[in-house]
Length: 275
Image (cartoon, rainbow, N blue to C red; front, side):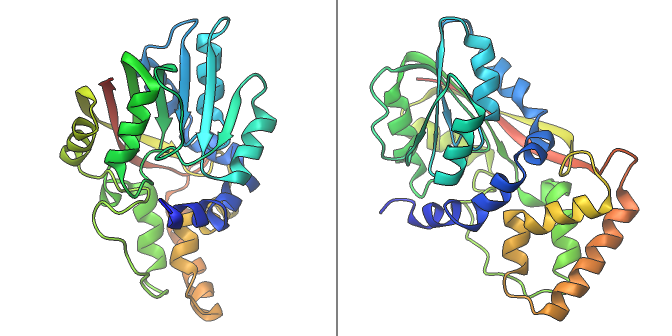
């Protein structure tokens, strides 16, 4: 079964973090919405596909741009997130499916967008070829994906604090499915070109994000420890190790937090292409 590991992950503990606190994730990542939407050049009447739609924030923002007359379809492998997106996104069709292999139609969309939803395919060339077939000739692709973990202070801050006290997890190899699978810009260009996309552009974007949304130290700690990255790091820790890791992370957050929350650096690729 394609993407079996990601299927199990996003229909299990990883989805729970997002379903339990969708607004906190949306607030953390909201700055990337206009970035993707502007790059996709959405217009009224466009038919849009949001890949890895999660709880539907990008799909809803796209729907505002293409209405009236347009349509947005969201697709995600996670059943719990699809259910949540359906509840929160009236007027938008949301489909639970693996976008790598699911029949999304032919020439069915004018634009394909994604906010951190396309890095989880075990065969990205096959996935992007399948997605290209769903987009009309000369249709647009626009998505954001994380650069390398070391380029992202928002994740390295937590990793640095936690690994002082917890066992190091088994790390995936370079390019393996996961949040940082598209760390290398040249690889992203190559994958899309091999999948049949053209005019591929990969632009670096550096910004800051409000980790976990507005909140105090305790809310930031809860966000970090419930996030999939935190879950992986803490999964093999003893109770004593968890306690020490929590204290270490608390110290780091207390040193950096501002009056409205924890702002840390984030580095992404803004990727555009044509079908």
